[in-house]
Length: 411
Image 1 (cartoon, rainbow, N blue to C red):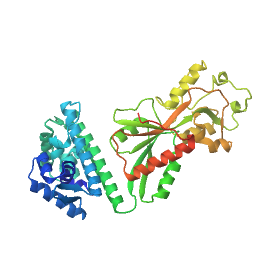
Image 2: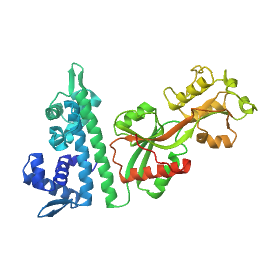
Image 3: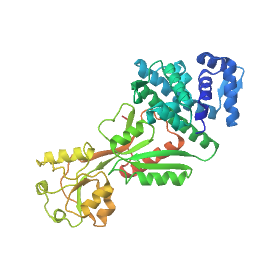
């Protein structure tokens, strides 16, 4: 990362951009004005770019300086929010009034991450290639800045307590901001660049994600995209830890956490799908009662598809099938249908090619409760990079094709 080693200098950039002068920034940070001036000059020397325009009335950030200062302040504000967690404040303090935000450095973050992973100072030291006393000193300084114990000490090692977990989460989010600062900085020097990770939920993204990805990569070849799939709970955890930028899939009625926002892209319908040539697909007058004893490939528990199936069957006065077989993979569900007389509740648009080819068939049944909202989830205070904005624009373009223009609020 370009900016992570210079976290100590970024404080001064953020403070000067906010205060408007090195003198006011020095007062905010409780340091000498000369220290501020040297720090700004040092980072400008490293980057070989002027970050501020000097004038008699103060220091005005250049466009690149302003962009960097915004990311730096957002990164530092994460640590002020961790102080909020410790002190149970209703509102987080400004980052420059937080001892943790003003003092934390790269070595403290690295020691904290290594300890969380290894569970002891010795394991953390081995992972970082430094002495155990150096790790101990960094962790002690971190607790001093936080003004509280961050670890539970036992004969088996150290474990983060709630305050320690809050600081670790702040570090994850701060590092994400600095990675995004890297992407924005390189984009300002040339073609659009950026690295994005998109998490996908099953049975809901085939008609949305591939065309959106192709649109972005065709227009912006410098963007790097990684697509991962997983369960809802696992992807939400990765999203909140800033390991994933967006989640695409079927949305829940409410966001899964206060720090996660949902945005509806389009509505989709579910239907009962079977293999081509299935006896029920050949039936001229099909009713829900004909499905009473049919075997199913069921959706996963606590998903919108499972909730829809329960509503449908309850309205038809049919019992919910025995939980003999569930699948969390669209490909596996299709394979199970192809080799059996099982039924599945799927989005016909998701398997449109298979239906057109006669490999699968949609049963002609009256359906209700089958509408799903397909959309994206992101961290509530997420500030998109240019690459992320390009992907969000592509999602909007494809969703308009799928459903027409609609304005959907973020919840």
